[in-house]
Length: 616
Image (tube, rainbow, N blue to C red; front, side, top):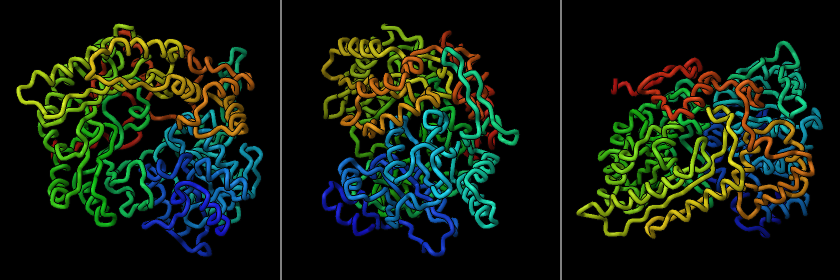
């Protein structure tokens, strides 16, 4: 097959996406490995190779002597056309072997609009797309990633899902597979039944789902007594000792994040009511500054990258940030390595942080007020005041920055047109702050307002909320555009039709699998890419399948209704989420976890908050 691949590479753009052979790739002797895993990312090479989670899992699995994990990315449309024309099935980069011949096909589900691409990859491998149609001689198809927290829209295509953090869980699952193969007890059904007993693994075929006449869920229960009623997510307790890739694969072509990515901590202390990541990644666990610095030096030695990015949901909430940046800057300045601090919060932006980010090549900084008025910021529990933002941009301007980007959402629960207009008012106040200064940066001020549409997400206080109708979202976008009249304020907005489809799949159930399969059959995939997203075609698919997208996207859900994702236990109590939802309608805030524990329940999953020892 390698000869056929070499031939078709001459006919496609960016053949470096498919060649493999990069510095740092892991190649093992096939004759000496007992289990092979194809780790599939349902997007292009450039996107997948920028994903830190994939790098962690690829390295962690390959630490197992009997396991060989290889990388697979979705071929771009020109490559797929050549593959289907020349009968070249989906293949892994390291060996160029057909994914169909692997033991496990693991697919990372990072975004709802990658579902068609994921299912298309199964088809491109030459496998039946529905799990019920695949026999014993086919690989176990495993799903994971953020979308697995509501896997129901794609449940019919997958054998099993990994729920939560995977670097320990997937190794445990692999060992179960090896043991069952070794002792002769393996069959696919027996393996899936045993895997359901492991913490953090959901096998959808082991659960019955029934629906009421109105379309809501009547019953969701396990088929057998030994299968758990709910699946508790996996959590890595100690980030200091857990696996982290120190010799990452070096891509041949430019990727989205072509730099050293250092994970500082997991979880979030804030509890914004719209944010799924802030809920599902709890509890907070931190990596020490010393470990972080040692990992950075080792990765730099192995790669030579000239930029380091400290990653987290909110880097300024990392309690060891000052200590860590001091350790890093001690050698990065000498080595001419740029230090990047993304995900900064305006209320914790200080002169010290401004000094440390002054070397960042970007001419601006980004903050996320999310809403234009204090009332709405309180309703979503942003815990951010206008003065916090103005103080942060003042420090940025004093530090020589002239460009500021502000992230907002429209369509949030309780939102009014006054709140929408407040976005333009807040942006104007940021511009005014620039002109209040006696000494200003040489470049003119530019404030970019970027507004996305609210999408209700599972496992959040707003999971019961409807999304605004499409017409309402579009009307609010136009209204804000009319209110922004200052040339120094640039206005960008997210396509409302994309957000509506995202909401359908975000809150969907198993009945959506028919629509996904139909869409794939019509050649639809890469829905996350503007050039291939077709809203009207999706509406036609839903109509053909007898599915009303408004049932999922635009319906207010009762607190007592069975939700498709109730089978997944993220550790945060539903009673806490209900309480937070009610507080939103009163514009009451909840303090962050560092100030006070509000009893969400997540600490039962691991160690209590591990604040930097030197800060105690």
